[in-house]
Length: 148
Image (cartoon, rainbow, N blue to C red; front, side, top):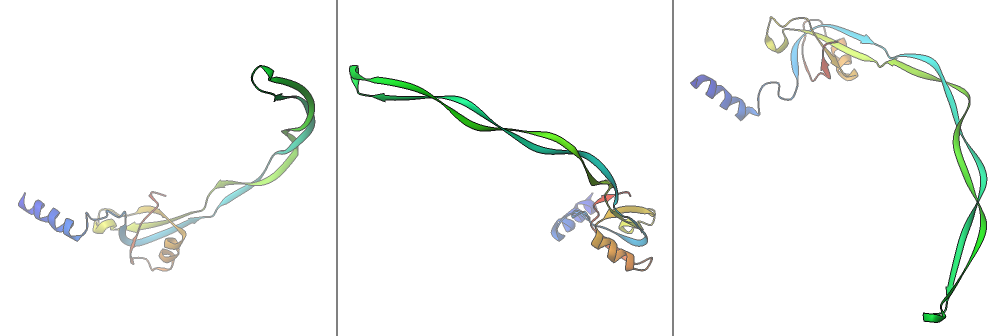
């Protein structure tokens, strides 16, 4: 109990628990890269079509005050644009089937020799550094997610 309390106190003085920033470390084993996969697809081409319409607008004016107050009304016809989206043929676009993924495999994750062959998905920069490192080189990085 005393040892556990002392260990927690030492870790707190150093700035937190191990791995609290999400970083993992281990020996580089393998790397994988899946490029972005796209396909060409079609979709409806929607365009805005407008028609000029008119509407009847009521106007009023008042004059005088008290019992002498009178008001008059008149109507005018004013134009406005009535717009709606309508399909006009189709258009071709590139649809992403899956985004690019970069993965690094580590052995001895966290210094534990029983945690071998663990895959981590990483960003492109981390992957580039791991790809040029020799197998067995110690790496430390913050993964995007575990597994690959």
